[in-house]
Amino acid sequence: MSDFEKEHGPKITGPVDNAWSLKIPSFKPEDNPHRLLEESSFATLFPKYREQYLKEHWPLIQKSLEEHAIKAELDLIEGSMSVKTTRKTWDPYIIIKARDMLKLMSRSVPFEQAMRVLQDDIGSDIIKISSFVRNREKFVKRRQRLIGPKGCTLKSIELLTNCYVVVQGQTVAALGPYKGLIQVRRIVEDTMKNIHPIYNIKALMIKRELAKDPKLKNENWERFLPKFNSKNISKRKQPKNRKEKKPYTPFPPPQQESKVDKMIASGEYFLKEEQKIAKRKREQDIRHQEAEKKRQERRAEAFVPPEEQSKEKKEQNNEINLDEFKKKVKKALKKRGGRS
Image 1 (cartoon, rainbow, N blue to C red):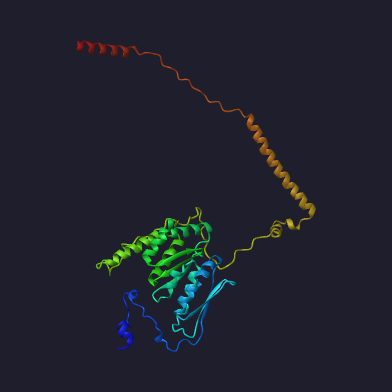
Image 2: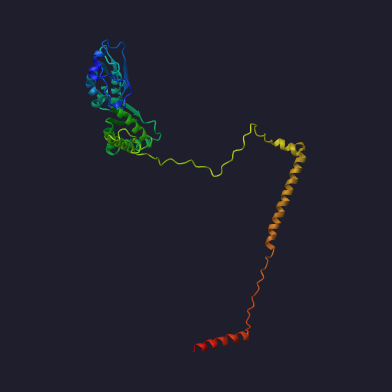
């Protein structure tokens, strides 16, 4: 049995159900006795407002990097930080970790948190959020929504993902375990796409509770998670009068006649200038005559007497039929006598 199997157990070669639970083996100087053949270096710029902080903490940064045989340099004139490997560096990936540490410190992450990225199970992610929204006002509102009132939303994200998150300018810097970094990136991108972070926070809380239940551990959790329905999606308005498409023909439409073609067809093109003037004069006289005729008809309408409506008076029939009246009186007397 090898030393690796004695320390970490048997080597796993097949697929793993929960890869996040695997422990990353540490890389020791004994694993690379010949060290590195080539020198690697990285440099990054930092803003002016971070100069004083970096200048004060630079001895601590150098000390933490010297433990991994990495040399660090600070250039205050150009405003840059650089790291490079030495002859004693044994870990080939530590230079990438050192580069990430400098990037985090240039994005306002404190030294106490940034030095954690040198650990094997800790990673970092710098998310650019400026490209999600073009409107400046919307960008500021959504970035503030990610922070929350008094930073409570950002604090809840840190507690659920076990990551340290800093929102600075047009970037979001995250530092923590690799699983938590994936969750932080999803929350940040959804927030900048106008999805409130409370939906993702609730989903993470529900998943944490469901993972504790052994009965629901291996089941589908979709029915328990909150679903986001956007209310801003509106159907495209259809025009009232839709033009029907004509049947497709491979031939182009016929060429429209020009003014000269029309004059040739009517015969006007071959007339002399005097004849053209006489023709226009005749057409103008005809139009004047028609307009004069309509004007005379409009004036004559005022002298036409209106039709009188015949009112027939209804003659009132005042004649009284005496026979019928006598019969009515007799009936009334008979009824009165019968009652008495």
